[in-house]
Image 1 (cartoon, rainbow, N blue to C red):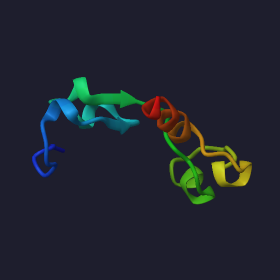
Image 2 (cartoon, rainbow, N blue to C red):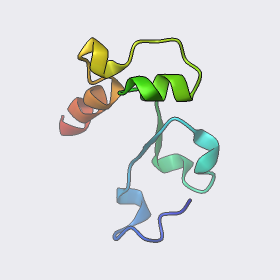
Image 3 (cartoon, rainbow, N blue to C red):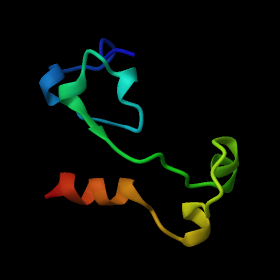
Image 4 (cartoon, one colour):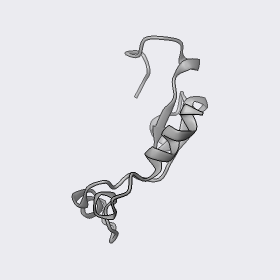
Length: 71
């Protein structure tokens, strides 16, 4: 993956992802986070035996990151 389709300087881009090796050329832009399972189907698809964030009525890590970015 690349940032060539994004307007602006690379230094102004923030990447949130659960897979580091997808962004080998942009590790300085990456915030590595846990895999996001909002829907039950996502839990099953990746083989996790967990409750989805929608069932828990929780926004998970994305909400935490958004709060940090706003600050």
